[in-house]
Length: 124
Image (cartoon, rainbow, N blue to C red; front, top):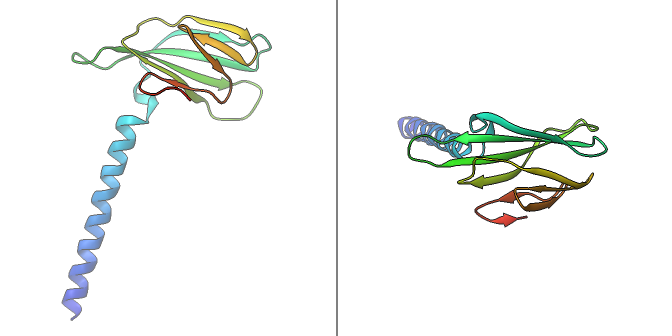
């Protein structure tokens, strides 16, 4: 009886370890922008200095096209930066401010700080 419990514990621990490794790989592959931000190509601050947008060019390698990533930095609040823009098959970032809370990045208008753009799903 004790050997069955020990075997079940080992199987459970190995299963949890395997699930943890898979979860980390999924996070790393799809959500960890720190590995995608290759080169800062543009930076722009809102008219009142509330936000700064950093635009990065991401080179996915020989088989993947370039992408532009936009990061929103909160200048007047102690918050972590936020991913707000991701466009695939693009190499430049034109950033225009309409007002302190509205920005246009490569013809995509966003209301900050809540709206984001991802080429796969549009504006959210």
